[in-house]
Image (cartoon, rainbow, N blue to C red):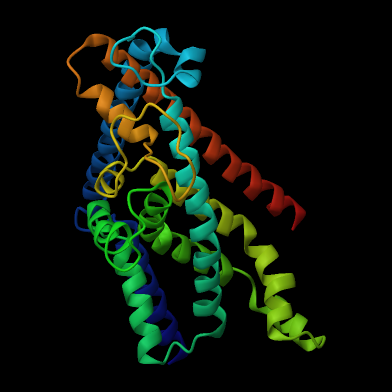
Length: 307
């Protein structure tokens, strides 16, 4: 009987391995075709992206100079027109976004992962909405920002911080999900060891869980901010003016614009000089994104080594 069982188990194992390997019933060549199709799609996407970047560099390099950073936009002097107001507006909006979304997003992730009772209906309701909101188109958040932040209950008007709050709504689900995954990845044994030595739950989270989760939290947050810095449609709805010749007066007063909106404004103009300026702005925005992603990688590697 034992011999028959061993034969049956060996046969079942072999059948399962062949099925997973894809070598049975023509599965091998289908797998190869599917793999080739995936590689082809990846190559097409990479080549398209590379073509766009190369075109932007070729057209925009003549305008990569100090005037691009130090001069205000101008429709008259096209040779020295710059993007200073858009750069300062982007800084205001991103600073407001960071000080808003990081504390709220990380705190929400800590609560949902460490304190919330997942059996409660309202906790499941919050988790479902966080996951669904991560896939909502950005224009919807722009409409909500216009209805509730620029007008409506908050009534901030078309100021830089209204843009920050609108983008915070956009990237908050991503920050929460990334922070939850980072916190969840911390070994349970670390929590148990801290609690076993007499630490409270909050001391365990603050001194052990969060430091271990920092690389994942920072990486997810900066990637979310990288998405926000390239958004145009929501900010157009909440007051990012397409042509501003002065820097914002502050977070809560004065008109503002941002780099994506300014690039869009230059790109739709028929004059070639403005399109060259738009290409230069694309290069500048790509440089900012590259710096942000590099910082995320550096922080992740630093804390990983320290851990």
